[in-house]
Image 1 (tube, protein in one colour):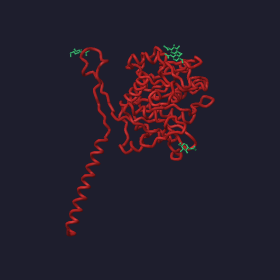
Image 2 (spheres, protein in one colour):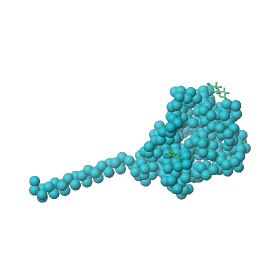
Image 3 (cartoon, helix red, strand yellow):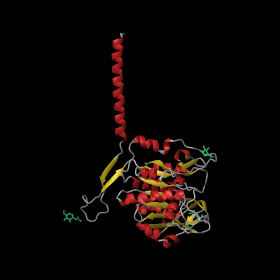
Image 4 (cartoon, protein in one colour):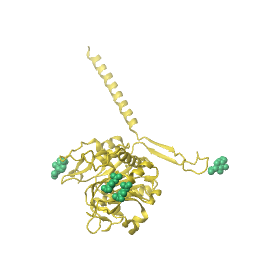
Length: 354
Ligand SMILES: *[C@@H]1O[C@H](CO)[C@@H](O)[C@H](O)[C@H]1NC(C)=O
Ligand SMILES: *[C@@H]1O[C@H](CO)[C@@H](O)[C@H](O)[C@H]1NC(C)=O
Ligand SMILES: *[C@@H]1O[C@H](CO)[C@@H](O)[C@H](O)[C@H]1NC(C)=O
Ligand SMILES: *[C@@H]1O[C@H](CO)[C@@H](O)[C@H](O)[C@H]1NC(C)=O
């Protein structure tokens, strides 16, 4: 083969390679554009017979991304328990960490790209002795306030707060000593039921919940509880911020028969708080008879996950690119299995954040 032919072949080969690669990139980008659709809502609730044009426009975001708060793990790492990540995945979302040590500015920017936020359970202190908020709860409060602003601007933006997260929302709304009662409740590793309040009739969380799940919630012990701290229903009467802003939707009783708040919902925002742990029913698989694993308990948890992610599908906040999402996603980093055989976690080096 002479050298001229070789060079020509080489040039052709390079052109073909370039075109192929470029085409691949274009296809890749096209596939990864956010999939958002604006639909006409079905007009079930409209009055009168001829309702086809009365439907409101409804945005559906098929690729919702949820921010999950980190919290301290040990002296060198923060963490997120994997069950919370899987809980949002089961309903079709992906999760990114909200690193609680990040600056307010960084958190504000991240929240603007997310479609919903989850405050998980854990054992990080929620309040100080005098009722004021810890640093961690202050970051939670910052995000809650941002989310409220988005909703006020007409951007539907949900929060689901579980156990400690639920306590953090309540404590930040009423930062007093008697809001979150510390170490008084005996509801550790405990399956329980929820006694629902009349206000359930005004709740979005319960509006479309199938009757058999509502019945099971009240009559079977399908919620999993793990807390010494708790919130007494009285504070929802006592403090106007709670009374006026939140529905107290249900209570449970601990082993000493003390009543604690089990479910809340903000009146004017898609903000939901649960004292129990719906993610544990599905994703804790220890040989522990106290974690309700019945078909109904699992279905109830799945209902809550689907409800929350449906709420997150209602805004089109987004990251700049799929690469940015991929960089941030929690499930693209390795899982860490603690030696005690408990649940696996994602850990994040603290040094990286400060
Ligand atoms: C239904 O349509 C008819 C005819 O267009 C109209 O007169 C009537 O007001 C409509 N009813 C409602 C409830 O919109
Ligand atoms: C904290 O936990 C991580 C993950 O198990 C581990 O790699 C690290 O060494 C631990 N740090 C300390 C200070 O114990
Ligand atoms: C629900 O829990 C309460 C408090 O533990 C209990 O009194 C009640 O009997 C339970 N309901 C059912 C149907 O088990
Ligand atoms: C639910 O738990 C309570 C308290 O532990 C217990 O008294 C009750 O019998 C349980 N109810 C059912 C239906 O298992």
